[in-house]
Length: 117
Length: 116
Image (cartoon, rainbow over all chains, first blue to last red):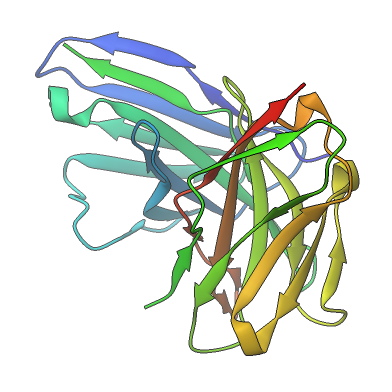
C-alpha cells in the first residue's frame, strides 16, 4: 500500500496565531512531498514542493515566509501557516511521491481543514 | 505553462448507464496524466495514470481512460456506473523531470451525480 496521513484533520485558530500541519507517509519513504491548497468547490493548487533535507520550492505567488515547510525526514513534512488570517482559511492537502522507476505516483493525504477566525 | 480543462462542472448519470468525463490538457512535451477521485471527507484516490505505452489505460473500480495525443485529451470512461461512484473527479497533468514527477496541475473537477 501507499498511505499518507495528515494531522490534524481540522483546526480552528484565532487570527494572528500559527498553525502546524503534519504530513506523513506511513508505509514508504518519500524524498519529495507536495503541498496543495483547495478552496471550496475548486481545484487543487500546488503551493510548494518539499524535498527531504533541503529547502522547499514555492510556486509563484506563494509567500515562503508565511507558509513554512520543513521536510526533516523521509516520512514527514510539515507546513506551518504563520500569523494566520481569515483569508488563509482553506483545505490543505499534502501528497507524497512514491518512487517506482520513472513511473512514480503521488499519494494524497486526507487533507486538513483550516478555519481562521 | 501546462493546464488542464475539464469542461463539465456537473454531470448527472443514471445508475447502470455509461459514463465519460472529459479532460483536455495543454503541455509542451509528452504529458504524465492522472485521474483522481475525491469523495466527501476523504482524500484523493488515484484511479489511473498514463505515462507511456498503450494509450488505453485500465484503472481501479472499472474505470479506463484513453490518451489521444492528436486531441490533447485523456477522457475517463466507465461502462456502467454505480451509486457509489458519485464523487468529484479530477484530471491532472504532471511534468516528468529527472527526479520523477513534479507537482501536478489539476483541472477544476467534475462533480458526478448518480440518479437512481
